[in-house]
Amino acid sequence: MWRVTEPTRYGDALAAVTVTYSPGETLDRFLDTLAKATTLPVRVVLADNGSKDGEPERAAAERDDVTFLPTGGNLGYGGALNRGVASLPDDVGWVVLANPDVEWAEGSLDKLLEAAKRWPRGGAFGPLIRETTGEVYPSARLLPSLGRGLGHAVFGKVWPANPWTREYRQEKTEITERPAGWLSGSCLLMRREAFDSVDGFDARYFMYFEDVDLGDRVGRAGWLNVYVPDAEVVHIGGHSTSGASARMLAAHHSSAYRYLADRHRGPLWAPVLLAVRLGLGLRLKLVTRRR
Image (tube, rainbow, N blue to C red; front, side):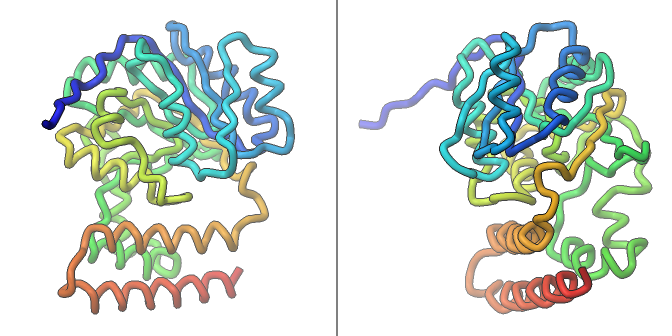
């Protein structure tokens, strides 16, 4: 006899989960600015993928609202976030998912929470993300269809102004509060109910495309991915992954193929996917050789 499991009823408490992997001094900036990003109490879980610098342990020891959670290995970004969210008690109904190299503008998290009231079917909410130069990063994008995704992959580096990349990145779209196909996973606020409805991140994506995949599945589950540019953060980037460019490039191409293959199944798609795999492999060799 089948037993129907009722969805967990969560409270309104707020928590943040960030993945640490020898984050260095950026972690303190993340924690300090997060405290000023909201007037609400926020507990923080450091889902640690094997840091060697001791910074996550130190931060947890010095701050009452921070918990150090070793994942037992390097689970990748999505896998570690899943582990962190699973550790939260049921009174937490709102979860920030973020890199530890994000700096929050004052009041920015409160603005995301305010937007959630305006969008009752919003499952994920993403702020405007700036580079350290002040330039706005295109963090609210269309989903990469086969044609759009391939056009961006093939021409993105050699012809940045190509129509596929411009459409995919929504570079000419007005910066205004709106639904998007997916939002950058470097900084998200999610309803925990929405996170549960899609079983969180797909841990097969070690790095890259885990946020694209999540945004797609959130939308398929009936939720919205909402871009909230009134809320701002700065993404410093690069500290934990410096020196790993070859591995990162390989992971990016592998994840891109997985995303497309998962959505184009069956024998009719096999020749197309073979061509995609070969094309991405060639592109990886060319980009790696250039670097």
